[in-house]
Structures are given as C-alpha cells and as structure tokens.
Image (cartoon, rainbow, N blue to C red; front, top):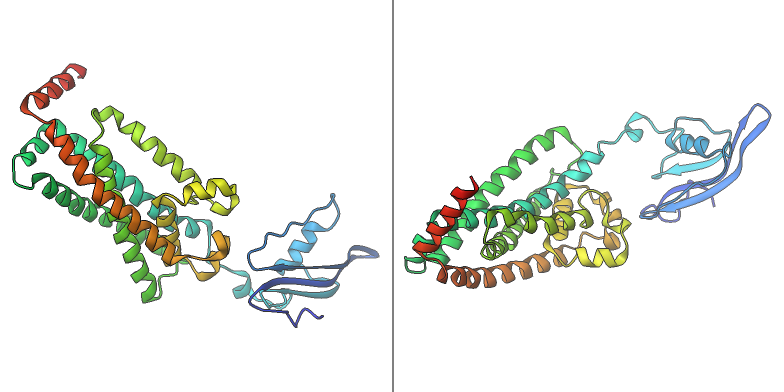
Length: 315
C-alpha cells in the first residue's frame, strides 16, 4: 500500500514505506517501513550509526531521502513548507491550563482555611456566632469574596498567557463557556472544603500540614506531565480528587482537540468532570456548615483572649 493512500487519515499520523537513504555508495537506511497511529508512542532503537537521527530528520523535512514514501499528518515532509513544520503548541501552552486548575485548588483550600484561622484568632468568628444564622452567612460571604479574588487571580495569569502562548484554543465561544462552568464548579467544590478543613485547624502553624497533601496531589494529577505516564493505581488515586478534574476541564477548554491524545482514554470526559466536581461541591457544602457550627460552639471570649496571649508570647 502506498503512503499516499493512508488507511485512515484520522488514525494514521505517520507512515513510512521503503525508505532509503544513501550517502555516496553506502546505504544508511534500506527499505525501512513503519507506521504510527494517533495516541501511540513510537520509539526508534538501534546502535550508533543505525540511521535513527537521519530518519527523524527525514520525517521533519530537514533531509531529503534517496527513495521511498513518507507521510506525516498526510503530508510528504519533502514537500511541506514552513507553515507545515511550524507549530504554536509549546510546552508552556500545554502547562497553562493545568496550572490554572491547580491554582483554583491551592488557593481555594489554603485561602478559605487560612482566612478562617485568622478570623478565629481576631474574634471575627465569635462575632459571627452571635448573629442569627451567623456561621452560614459567614460561609457564604467567604465563598463569594474568595471566588472574586480567585477569578481576578486567574485573569492575571490567563490574559498574559493568551499573548505569550498563541497555541491556546480560545477562538470559539464553546471554549469560554466550558472554562466558565469548570471554574464555577471548581470554586464551589474547593472553597467550602477549605473552610471545613480550616475549622479543624487550631493553630496557624498547622496550615503547612494541610497544604502538604495538596502539593502531593499536584504531583500525581497531570499538572506538569501527562497522567497517563504514571502507574494505573496512581492514576486511580488522582482521579478521586478535584485537582485532576479541574486540570482536565481547563485543558479541554483551552487546548486544541489534538491534545486529547495524552489524556486517559484519549477523551476530555466532560460528563465525568461535571459529575466529580458536583460530588465534591455537595460534600463541601454539606460538611462545611456542620463543622463551622461545631467549631463556633467552642468559641468564647476567653478562648480568643487565650489565643492572643499565646500569639504574643511567640512574638
């Protein structure tokens, strides 16, 4: 079968048949043939001088072959121009959406928990406790105010990224709509959870213990490299928590469709993203008011004064 007649243009992205490369009277490559399909990882193995680099250069269009047929993305590299060789999809482009998703989790949990710890120290929670439905109002107010701060922080990162990394796929309304619902669900899934965690912290110095496992989740959630490169059992652990799904949702909104090949199942899985984030939002909204009321029952003027006294002694 000739290379010009690809079996399925949507699946076969690279096909080589009868490739030959001769330097003078020596054949470096002789009758080389292979194919790569969408989503596959192809390795060229061989000793020094086997022709691996020559093969890659031919596939890139930087070296003319002596004979044979080659097609990369349906184009003969020998005839592909600069537009075919060029790409705006860089490592930075691939990382930006994941970093945005991870930032929502980090800032959501640390922001809500940290604010609650500070408000307990200065007596704000004690005053909220004294008002009708004070703890529920406190929780809603914190979620709204921290959400506005999160959106502002996201824009500070996203706007320059759109200029620095033109490969981000934001040219369609659907991309922005997906970004909005992922962001909204991410905030609702993480901020109440952070408030609930903060209600369990007695000392500001304990915040580091809270963020340590969150940092560990970032390492296994596909933020800085594809999650498919990790063992399956590690992938399963990561997919239990919202950080992976926020990163996946952001990638589905901001990256071109071709980037899906490195995802689990080669799919953006929007319904799974929606479902997992909704579950975590329900968990956070159900637990946070209960934990806050439980903590508020233990608050008193004497406890606030005792914490201030301990803080002054540390200083």
